[in-house]
Image 1 (cartoon, one colour):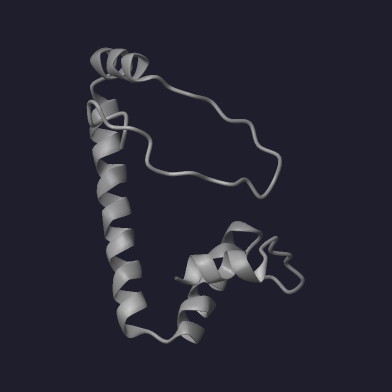
Image 2 (cartoon, rainbow, N blue to C red; image 1 turned 180 degrees about the vertical axis):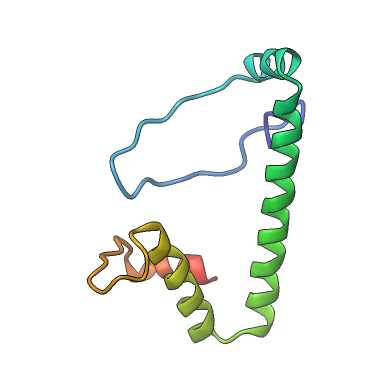
Amino acid sequence: MALVRPGSERSATVVALEPTQTLALTSSAFATLCGDHPGVERTITVLLADRVDSLNRYLVEALYLSTDRRIARRLVEVSEVYGGCVPGTVIPLTQHDLAGLAG
């Protein structure tokens, strides 16, 4: 969001569950990238719209689904990231992490 909204600051923090390498992109470098490759802005717009849709779904779930169902849905989503719903799949989350995902 901070890249596409002038004057705004980064609004999220993440914690890696596995060893990770991060890269940073400054606003000026992003502006240059968009100028050189106009399709980048369209891609970012689509990604942001997808994120809004996802957040809307989570909000509806938080309002209308039981905690058990929200936890089950998040477990299925996370298990797909960590090898699919295969017996023996290890998901490196604590109960606190899972509670945060389930809202």
